[in-house]
Length: 592
Ligand code: ADP
Ligand code: MG
Image (cartoon, rainbow, N blue to C red):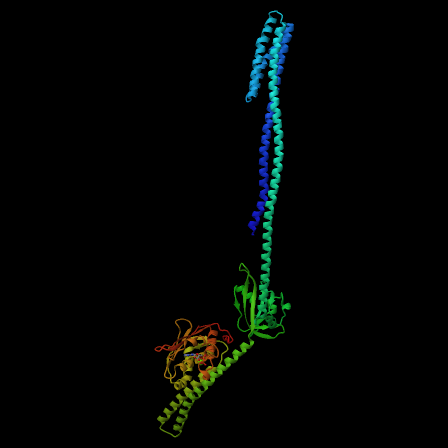
């Protein structure tokens, strides 16, 4: 159940009593209206009775006035008669309009009118006329007749009053019944609504409580899952071979695995909540300068970062180890960085191994070249000693000068070879401008004998100087490796082609191609792996690996394209170098 459903239930539970109360109020209103109508009818009956009483009083006044006049003959009694006589029609009118809807009363009233008129005309007026004429009005029969007429009038008035009283008491009974009904209905509605509200509320609350229980179960299930996943993660972290440290956003250490503890020399308890730079103190191996912490770097760049080469970790006891590491941000659900994870490993041994391998490869190249060079130097020296012999044994002056010229040119060749040889092993400390054309020429010169031995032809395309900033000895090593590979692949009877161009912009492109058998597909992916060779004992398998390390250190690229098809087999190796690369100061070898 979500929040909206919960709110709906709350609204229902609130609304139902309100609706129930409204229904009750409606029912009550109808009942009260009925009762009010009854009360109005009762009041009307009361008014009828009062009106009838008023008429009766006037008739009585009229009669007593008539009697007074009849007994005394005094006109003053007639005044009462006249006044009552004058008022009666209006009061009868009132009574008539009050009872006009009731047919029984209408009949009663009609009777009353007739009887009254009868009494008035047939008794009252003749008596008055007799008295006024001076006669006696005490005739017993006439008076009895008048009394009979008046009794009828009284009977009619009594009938009207009685009928009004009868309907009044019916109404009152009705009113009592209505009030009782109202109370009963009220009790019934209240009970019904109470039960309904109770049942409804109970069912809604049950729904809420079962939803609540389900959510609790889901939550506890999730908590269990999170716990398990955290356990898995902890076990994984504890058992991997790299050091792992996680920090919060401020760079305070929250967790480190056993390898990280061993590498830094800090125990996990000691390191907890310490700033990363206090525990993970890193400096440049060569300069000793403090290196930016991975936390700062990750925050600055906002992504995964690697560490610069030559980073050394100062352990707690002050000893140093070389490390390679990477840092990555830990994002929350919205992508905000909430922490940093750092992974690092000890590469001291790896680095030493690489350096040794590099030295070995240099020695191997030097060894191979030594024989070539001895041979190269031997030939001109032979020639010089032969020329010296000829000079000593004498000849014409003309011949001697010719011999000396020849000896000089042979010695110049020896000097050239020895300078090239020195160049190969003179290591400069910083990158210097290097002319690729002259480097390639030197190498080709030293290797002339070897080409001859292998029976390969050499074609060059070195039109003009192409200068880049580099470590010359290292580039010489690269090109010696690549040209040797080409010569070995092309022999015997093949041809290699070496060219350099400015590549139409800053930088240079050196191409070394051969028309050897080409490199089979299966071999290609392995070319740059250390110790991979197809030459058995004659190869070290380090040439390409070292070359790529040097070229990428110079910010360049080395690419190999090869074809093994029958008509157009051969291999093209291109080395692209930039004019002013940013060169890392130490050897940057690819990993083993
Ligand atoms: P190595 O020359 O000592 O074998 P490299 O690293 O120089 O080691 O070369 C690795 C392998 O690459 C060689 O053994 C060879 O099989 C292949 N290779 C390199 N250059 C060429 C090429 N120009 N033509 C054919 N194969 C080549
Ligand atoms: Mg090689």
